[in-house]
Image (cartoon, rainbow, N blue to C red; front, side):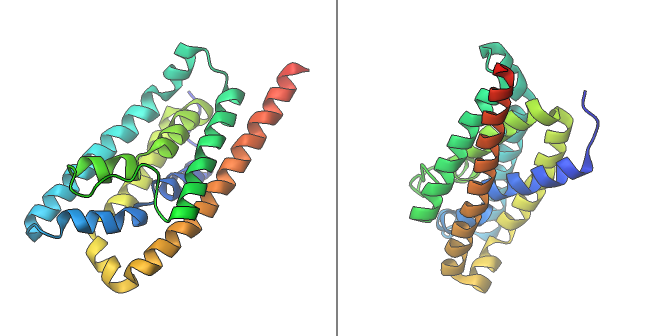
Length: 199
């Protein structure tokens, strides 16, 4: 098992938080909880947070085994993962929201927990990281990103009042550039490793 690497955990937690991008989910979240009492809204947010936590654990722990089961090499998956992350970033940059945004009237877990927060990009990064850096490093990083995400969701009303929806959408587009940078790095790394494996 790879040792705990603080620098890797710090970088990975930032990447995960950027891809989960809870700020982009705030408008949808507010639409979902706007008609319920404060107590009920907290309960719904906690329920969504629990679903997010479970999904993060599943993909971080099982991710490496999924690759082994299908016989997928790390270079190949890194290239594919980079393409998925780039598609996520481009969609966010052009449309201002994440792919597969669902009707706000749907159950709280569906629009908030997945796919708005734990979408294809998050799942892909977790699976790749579990294989590259080990399950423990990936889990610790995902927990850090989860705590930050949970805090954002709990204070979403305050953030919306303070910053406004225009700023939130603008920040979401900026985060898409960060995600695109991660994607380019992942694709280049995958191509480089694949070329080395041929020689």
